[in-house]
Image (cartoon, helix red, strand yellow):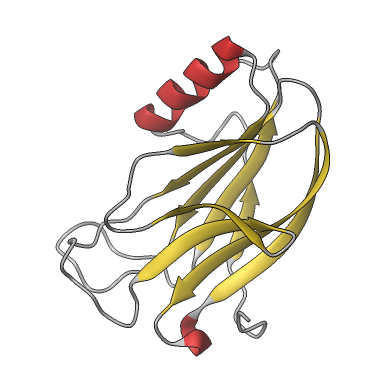
Length: 149
């Protein structure tokens, strides 16, 4: 089980947020098909071989079943089909040391054609790219078929 003592920063997805190009592209493709589900993206900037205790696997769970995950070896946005209705989703960042892992739960109501977009920027080891956040941060929101992205 994930340590409940460490909490990530969770923010809502709104018009002011810049959605990465690859996420917008995948979102557009799934909306065009009329799909309902969840789209997970993790901004992982660590090298593939850079395994440290801060390295993490970003995953979404429902009813103790893993829906999808992203890691340093799987970086593209991942879409999973879900049925319309209420869903209790666990958002997790799992690390080698359980004390460094984080999670939170959110109940979402999906209507036909809605897509839950979950973008994570996890704490990462010292890398040459932009500075890592102090805590795992998530941007989560439901995009309806009528919304412009």
